[in-house]
Length: 348
Image (tube, rainbow, N blue to C red; front, side):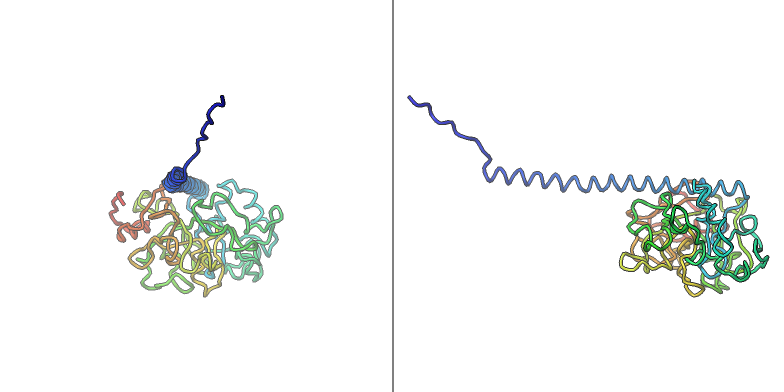
């Protein structure tokens, strides 16, 4: 007698479609969760970067008894605070390379790191455009100055990890022959003292009118700095450094070198390229058109980030806090000033 055949079990078409649908639903639920975890990790790294920068700025203050110059000179091609704190973020060899170059391409360092008249190590001329016998490259961080190399790369083209926010979408350089990016820019204050010089470009607001923490000299003869004692609003109520990313003139389609955020200082553009000041300094003033940007179309002189809903900021006391784009404009403007005597609620 022959034994009966065994029936082979298999998925029906309907069962297979159900399994596929379940997998698709799980993926749809999982992807946002993974993205949130990745963004949370990126924000944590961003906060850590700002804390390191805060330690560096306070270490600088311990040595020189003031914070560094924001930017000297008035043509927006000059070196800035991100270059001056290199020894305090474990970039001592890079700083040495920049300051020990030949006369024509080395980085100019003001006497006592700022806070007085410019003098020349070469030539002795007080006007920064005349330093080193009229070689303006000595005071500028453009490609014709700072031409020394480190490991075969021009020093100012170096990409430094502590200056990069993992959430940012801009490339680490405008191109392979341009300055290294920094997603962290200094706060030069708000516009409350700008009435006599209502712009930030050449002929505009001078260093002694800046009411922030990292000051833009906007002249050839003097530099301006802030001491801890000058923060009369309180260090916990005063912005020191904030985030920068895409803006009106800087995006994936147009990597404008003038406003592209970089660590060396001015992004270029000469005296008329006023937007290039935004390469390392920004304004905190929602009331006058400098709100926290949303990372796509904010003004070139505004802080902004790719984090959802706001940006991370380093305060003068060394703490890092997240400020939402919906912050009260009056509060945000007050945080931009070190000496406005405003009363600020910490619940912003």
